[in-house]
Length: 394
Image (cartoon, rainbow, N blue to C red; front, side, top):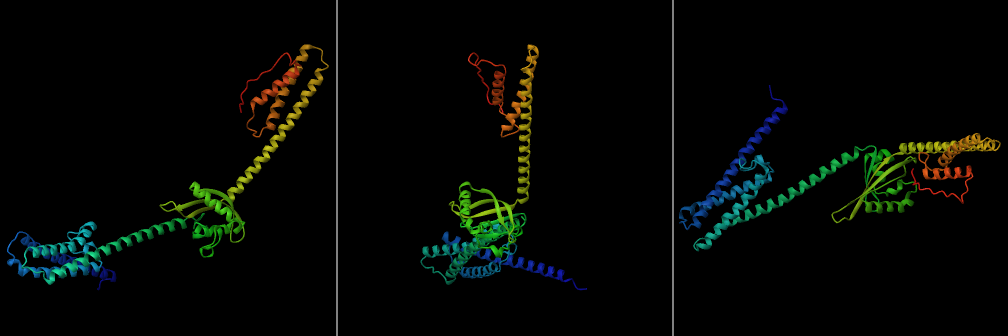
């Protein structure tokens, strides 16, 4: 029975992986061996050792080194990972792999430098064609690897930016109840998320490049207000406001808008972001509560006004009745009752005139109460002076 297609594919991948391991190790060993041979030659040159022993193997080592570098370049161009890289057993990590990539061409250039120094110190020696070829290949390898490193870094940065942009897009589009807009410094729409489509009813293609003021009831006439919003957001780092906005079907809704500028490292404004939320229901609830509270306040004030009038009427009746009483003890009782009723009427009068029904100015109440007592007992103000030292106690 034949193996399933997936198993055959896995077996083929494993075989290619083992083959690449073997090729990588073989090429790495070849390059390393050529470096060692050239190193022996250089060591002998520096120590004035007779070179006749090494002259025969020098060119061979150079050509082996050239062949190894050519195959090494092929492996690099093949874009194999660190596991398949030559000298895989030394490149156990990505850092060591990068160091190894840079080491091989630099080592080739170093061999040539020592070769040149040897020729300079021994006039009878001449540089071979293989030496110049090693130099050329080394320089090409260094330039290529440097260029490749910059390309790799650029690709990594591009990939990182793409991943960051994708995460931002996913996050913004997941906000179905919030419209997230990016605007240029003038106010033209740059981005339009799914929440904005849900709230306004417009697709991104319909609004891209338009001024954000088109959604205000005044349309383009709201441009001055939009500029004022941008100015305040720039000064305060962000600006919150509420106002009416229009949908595609012509209906209006009450929106909460937060505008935030985004700048570069020189603090130059590159544009603005706006996060908008439909709070029409909350606005309606608040308006209903405010209207209900005002009605209750008006009703309470009317009640206090009527109670005050009734108490004043009772106080007036007691005063009229006291005029027909001759008994001093009974008259004192009537006056005391009249003052108590009058004090309650003053309280309701203060509450009626107070802007806050939950609080009352106690000093004003004391002033009115003492003034009423002085008039009730017919105190001669030229003989008795009243001085109140009462702080305002809410």
